[in-house]
Image (cartoon, one colour):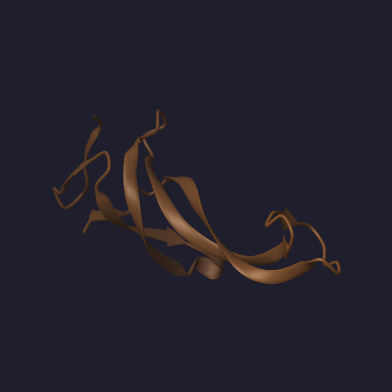
Length: 93
């Protein structure tokens, strides 16, 4: 089990629900709820976050396609992303 102590003294263990602060385009802050995974060998904290995006999906198979066709529809899908935070801005929920 991996343990990490953030700058506020909160102890995070693998599997803990956390709030993740990331920097987006134009230096905007994004906050998301995620799950603490551990610490990468470079010192960055790793978390899994649930995200969603819009994409083309085949109506028959349900698989993602790269283009629009007669058998596809544009819909929102959810996915999990593993990310390493270089600034370690992660806080316990």
